[in-house]
Length: 308
Ligand SMILES: [Zn+2]
Image (cartoon, rainbow, N blue to C red):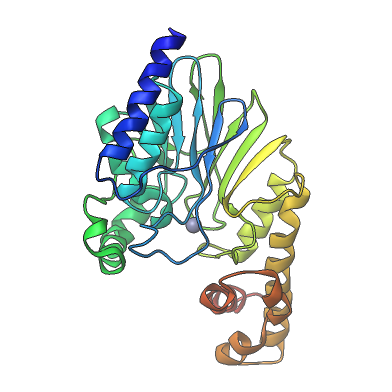
């Protein structure tokens, strides 16, 4: 069996080099037994990186595999699938779509042929209906022909609270969170190895993005802090900082915005004045700050404006 598997892996590798795939191979790190992560780049998506901007990966059980996010284009999804096939020939029975953002989900089409259950938050279908078309057009604009085949894949199994996936000898707990990074965030917890996949509930180095509720985000992070984990996977970036201290930088960033936005509101500053002044003490701590920070303050202002 082992020899056969190895031969299969070699064949797959040779195949990759021969085929005109845009991504020849995709690096995987086995961060805990059976948990394989591909770390995406902090660059903006481009025809050069094909939308390989988020951390994605999979968990292998004795019976089958759960994929956790699929990358920002069909090309990334195909490369992930090939990388997975170099690790195991077991069927892919689940593809977890952690939330609506395009850098995490446009690779899902590559797994359609595996006929898995596509797992998403109960709020995901509504979010996809509202934004899917816009995201697909924007991807086409940014990647051109390389976006080909990238389509929104609808979830076929919804998680309201929690769902346990049985991969054979390995139980994987999918948790649906209240509004935080978005209103449709899932985490995945492999209990056997204590590996927690946080997706965009945790940004490392990359400026955090608030597309749900900043107060909700802080609340969810305080709850996540209590989850025991030996290993963890952020949605963007990687770190040697242990769990749960790895959450601290993001929490501090969000709390600085809340505190300073409340002061700005109290001082009757306009939204523009708030955007120009709030949170710049954090600028040196994050990459892509200009791109995301002002938007975070804008949404915090709108959210906090109505507080007593
Ligand atoms: Zn996101």
